[in-house]
Amino acid sequence: MKLLENKTALITGATRGIGRGIAITFAKQGANVAFTFNSSVEAAQELEKELESHGVKAKGYQSNAAKFDAAQELAANVLKEFGTIDVLINNAGITKDNLLMRISEADFDQVIEVNLKSVFNLTKAVIRPMMKQRAGSIINMSSVVGLKGNAGQANYAASKSGILGFTKSVALELGSRNIRCNTIAPGFIETEMTGKLNEEVVQGWRDSIPLKRGGTPEDIANACVFLASDMSSYITGQTLSVDGGMLT
Image (cartoon, rainbow, N blue to C red):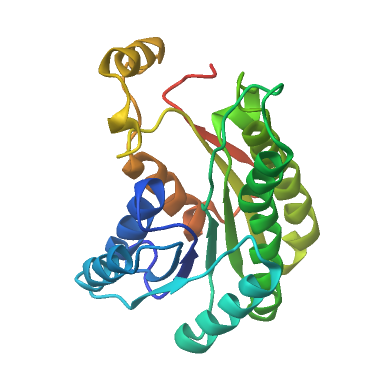
C-alpha cells in the first residue's frame, strides 16, 4: 500500500538536493506533487516527467515564496489545478555565510526572507483550504544549525531557529482543526552541493557522526513521508532531527 495515495503535496524548492529527493519519494508513495522552482525551467520539466513516470500528477511552478503575494497566488493556482493541498513542505532555503562582523544587512535580510518569511507566507496561504477540509500536514525544514548554532552562519541559524518557534505556534493554533505542523532538522546531508567540497573535509564530517556517514536526500524524504502520512496522525509541534546522531 502506498502511504500518500490520493494526497496532494506542495513542495518548495524541489528541483535539486533535498527537495528533489522529497518530491520523487512522495511520487513513489502515490502523492500528486506540485512544486516550486527558482530559475531552471529545464530542471523543472525534467522533474515533472520523472514524477509523472510514477503514475501521479505533477506540476512545477516558478514562484518566489519569499514574496507574500506570490505565495498566495501559488496556493490558489495549485488548488485550481489539483483540487486540494493536503501536505505543505516548506523546503526552499539559501545560505549567505559569513562571520557576523562581515555579514551585510542585505545578506542577513535575504536569508531571513527566503528561509523564514517564506514559511510564514506559504503556511498562511494554505491554512484556509486545510481548515475547510479539516485536515492537513505542514512540514517545515529547519536544520541542525537551527538547534545548535554555527560560527559563520548567524543569519542562517536565526532563520532556521525561527522556524522552530513558528512551527510550535502553528501546531497550537491549528490542532483543533486536525492540521498538524512539524519540523525536520537535517544534519549533514550529501547532495550535489556538498559534492563540490574537499573530500578530506567531508570525510572528517562523516567520521564525527555516530552513524559514520552523511545523510541522503532519501533519509529526509522518508521522514517527510512519515510526517505527511496518517501514520503520524497524533504527532504535532515536534522537531524530528535526521542527523545520524550528530546532536546526541
